[in-house]
Image (cartoon, rainbow, N blue to C red):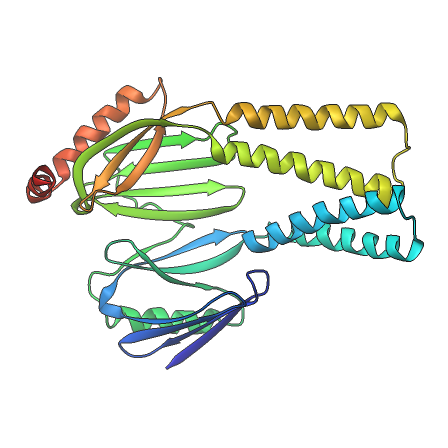
Length: 321
C-alpha cells in the first residue's frame, strides 16, 4: 500500500489522504466544512493526466484579506488613528500581498479520471511525494486496461492532426488549442491561472451540435477583480503607509480609474460570443469552443469531420431520445 497525504490550508484546512492498494484506491477527505470517503477500482480508470495550476484558494484568501485590510486601514485613518492597531493593519496588508503574489506560482497536479472523463481524484506533486507518485502510476498501469496518459508539457503526439482550432477569450488571458485526430479530440488550455490538457473520444459523442451565444462572465470577473485589487492595494499604501501624498487630484484620478475599470467590467457582461458545442450520449455538452467570423466556416468543416467519425450506433441512440 502507498499512502500520500496532502494538506490545503486555504481550502478550509482540507486534508486529503490517498491510499493506493494493488487493485483499488481509497480516498479520505476532511475539512472544516465536510468529510468524505470513497474508493475506486483501477479498472474504472480511463486517463491519467497532469496539469499546472495556481493556488486558487490561496489567491482568494489573499485577495479578500487585502480588501478587508484596506478598509480597516481607511477606518483607522479617519475614525480611530490608533498606532498599535495601524501596525496590525500594516502587517496584515503585507501578509495579504505576499499570499496573493505567491499564489500564482504554479504547482503540478496528477489527475485521475474514469472512462467517461469524470474526475475521480488528484494529487499535488511535491519533491517529497514525487517518487511515491511514480510508484502509484506504475501500480495502476499494471492493473488497468486501455489507460491513457496525457501531459500538458507535451500535449500532442507527433502525428499530424486532421484539423486544428485555436480560440482566445476577449482579454487574451486564455488560449485553447484543439487538435482533431482520427479517433479523438486533444485539447490544451493555457492561461494565467494554469495549464491543462484534455481528450475527448468520438465514441463519447452523439453527433448532436449545440449553437448559441454567451456573455463574457470570465472576462468580466477578471476585470472586476483587477479593479478591486488595485483599489485595495492603492488604499493600503495611502492610508496605511502614507506612500502617496494626500492630494485631491490623486484621489480624483484614482476614483476615475476605478470607475473606468468597473464600467468595462459591466460592458463585458453583455458582449456575447458565438459558441459551438458537441453533445455526449447523456445529452450533456462534452465539448465546446468559441468561434468568430474568421474561423466559423472552417469549424463547420471540423463538425462534419467529427460527425463522420462518430460510431453509427451513437447517432441511432441519439435520434431515439
